Length: 67
Image (cartoon, rainbow, N blue to C red; front, side):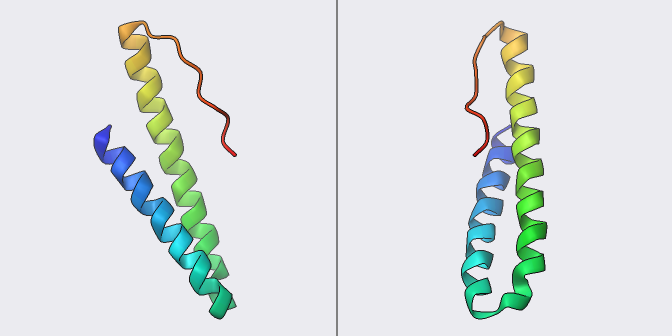
């Protein structure tokens, strides 16, 4: 779980970096879209891990919807 969280943070950082670079080089927009999708998949994997652990321990929680 920790690895997925760290991976998600790195993907988020990389996505923001690409967005900044796209301002100067619009041709990078496709890479931004790909990285954004990859980040979204990472978020879903992390949430699935949290769901599994919460069910295992009988914890009821509610995550805020993605923005």
